[in-house]
Image (cartoon, rainbow, N blue to C red; front, side):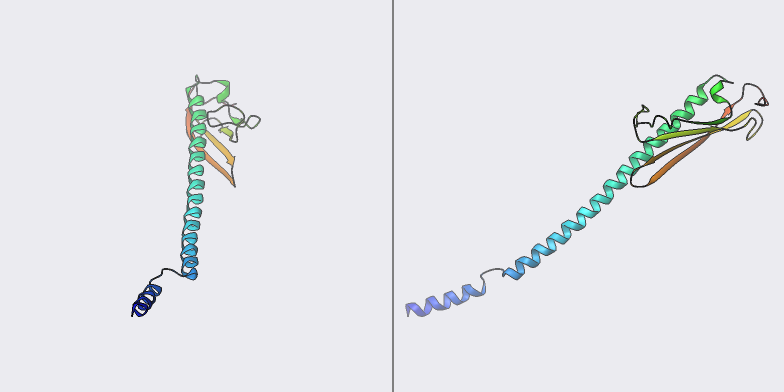
Length: 150
């Protein structure tokens, strides 16, 4: 009688032993797929964040140059019509040389868009995984109205 009870107890335990190897592999595979999905999402978020940071830096560099030109005395030689650049010294985020941002600007001919004004367009280019650019425009006054011809 003792042996009979023990066998029935052993049989009940066998049905409740736990997971099989196949169940464990399936669970591991599902967790792995979930982790890979989160990993690819985090890579995309990191790239987007880096792109936003670079666009902010480029906008700040363009704005810095616009403000520099606008703060000069009227009729300064740097406000003469023409194309200019910092291409020989690519810029860092703080505006010092040695970075990956190149800045170009164009000062329009006299009296464009109207009498006494010139248009200044500043463009900042950079390349990470692909080329990007930011362009800002503003007006500067001429020393006299209308602006003198060059």
